[in-house]
Length: 193
Image (cartoon, rainbow, N blue to C red; front, side):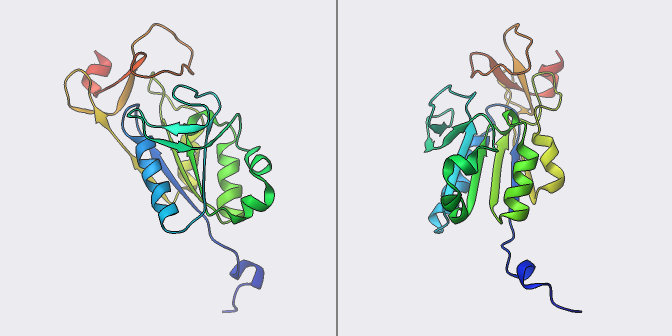
């Protein structure tokens, strides 16, 4: 068997890692843990979040318990390379993406960054909305993911394992950004009742 062409053999191989689950499951905490571990290993990292999510900070990814990591808040992922700077982008090893469900161009970005640019992509986002339907394009990433981690929370009503997010207010639009004032994690039993 002949060796691959030099340009293929020398290319860095990227990866895509997906962290999903209901609200309050620790998705952002898991994302930050992974990104901090990569940075601690000497890799150059950058974090992105949707500019729609300004609950805790506009320039940082923030967990519900207040842990922060500086980030780029963007309306789409296509603008990241340009905003970050093409030369600086070349030096990046790892890109973290929080609240990934808000990015309509998530699939395209991950294919480009991992397959062609050799980046490690770690995304965290909701896999379902409050109606238990696919939310955004996070589930579209599953076929190209190296790993998928589904986290759970604790049901706010009974303490059992929570896999769903229940909306506590009467608003019906799919995208309603909020915290514990708007959502709570619940088990299957409490979701259907």
